[in-house]
Figure (cartoon, rainbow, N blue to C red):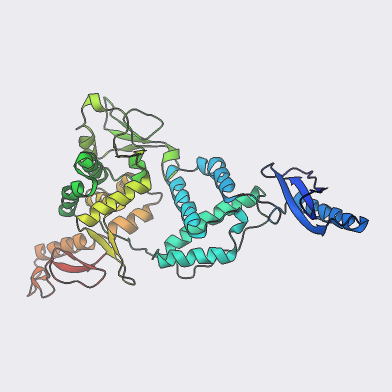
Length: 419
């Protein structure tokens, strides 16, 4: 903020009170504020108006712009997204956009200063009403808090409002997946219902996209930035000597680092299905009436396909709310398949996890049925007796038509909780 701010006392013929005018130190727009002091023609009233002008000027020079400043929410958001968010990874930028869109939808702030503690508390209430998890709510508030901290550093507001405290968010320990990896049979069902969801005209592009997610393990935003011929995007590399690789720029990747990663054989063969003459532009062409679909639009459409196929991947044990197969669940399926084929450090590279702990937590510990099958096989090979009834013939065998309690699914005829 400039050191010198001048506030003037002005009089308008159509207004009964003295007015104060100054150039807003943030937006450089001319601002006007009433003093509430009548224009009586008495010297003392003029002096009172000048006193108020001096008080306002000191507030502005000290950076206390909350009360007088009329910085709009729209101006704040435009500056924040262009000056700060533009330097973040693409995935982070999409998340911030989602949060700010939700703030606008629920609170409709006209000015930045409209985000008061009471209104933030109301935002949390609406998020809970929509059955967002406590951890998701914490993430929303963290992004919003970071945005307001930036606004404070830019002296757009005098201070950051107090945020609601979320007591029920998980602090540590193992966090279970809010979904499960779809099976191969379920994925085939998703491919079959694609025309019912997107129409016959777009079905081939959407089937191609789903197969790409299934074979690559890419995050949704990464997949939409995958191009054949643009080195400023994600793009595959097929060297003459060596194996296919995927080049990812730091700006487009969650880990915020340039990476050259191996492409698994199934994804390489998927890519090579495209003739040489067609290897131009984006690899996945998902179009709407207004051009290429955005990440939120693609995410919603994939979930619609999962629902149409009846691929339920999670049921909230508290609310009974169902979650259908999403783009991220296809990534989970990729990780689960390759967890059986490679060692954990190699899987960490394929999944692009920052730490091996994340890989172990979500893709090794969750494969309990596969581990149990290996244990029983080893037990029988060692001469161990076969129990009666056998584990796969016992009374807890169920069919897919058996009514199931919330949070439970069928895996190889055995009741198991969703993970």
